[in-house]
Length: 254
View 1 (cartoon, helix red, strand yellow):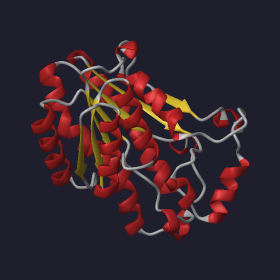
View 2: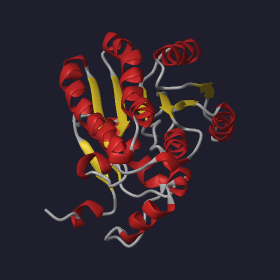
View 3: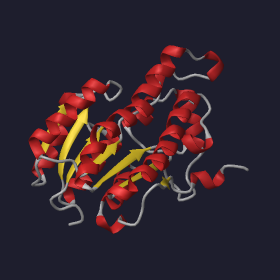
């Protein structure tokens, strides 16, 4: 198994992509800390992990709040003794409040930047010294194709995801000498609960952009890439952003 005896902390893992990542990593031998604002949902996924024969822990966290994040990491370290893999997956758009930028508000920006970009900074900061001291570790960030090409009606979300990609590259340069790797994965259109909550008008635009492979993505498509990057098979990979979109980005006119 690719992740035998590893400990993975996966944020935003009560559903969707995060849940798929947690279960895939568990199948590959990792113990999993399920971290989410939805503690009940996290608990259910933790039970799924246990059913696979792996240790698991459910912990509530608001990744936009550094105190919450620090408490989460403390809890995980007390339970497992280490964090080998951090998956910064928690995030999302403003959903029903998403709108064109000229109609947007600072309140919505703060929410979107908080759960996406600031959440990645908070969680990475909370584990990075632990990884540096151990001279090993992997940090994986869920970015988005929107952070590469922009998304109409989600300028704040696109900015946050673009920031995650830049942060990934910068942090990878800083910590490579300590044996810590950092990478990002940029999903295209993935069928998740968040996907179904997108305002109808914007969703119809997304649905027009069916990937060249002939379908939208599944959470498992992202989970497979994340699991590979977390494994020793990817030991010579750091600082890169991997697009998993079925080829949608190839259709963007330049």
